[in-house]
Image 1 (cartoon, rainbow, N blue to C red):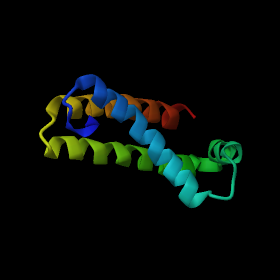
Image 2: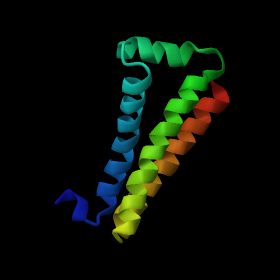
Image 3: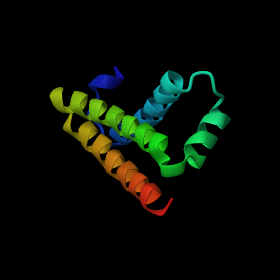
Image 4: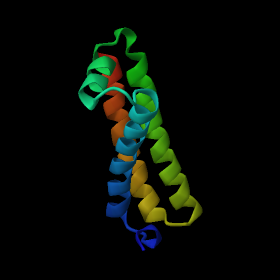
Length: 100
């Protein structure tokens, strides 16, 4: 099963997929009636980027859940991959928040 493997590449893949899942869940919960285009237009054009910050935070929270799961099951290489993806994703978020 995929959850029992201990692999750095698998962790990186999970670390890249979990934030996308978090963003989709945020869109579905808060902006269910809007299309994806309208949702992304709103979070990009909103003054102060409050919704963008909330969406990105939820995305990183999903990575924290995946990371915690792999740490608790002692799959350290996979957890390391999730952590690497989280750091890279966090740097991108920091750049967006700083220069947007």
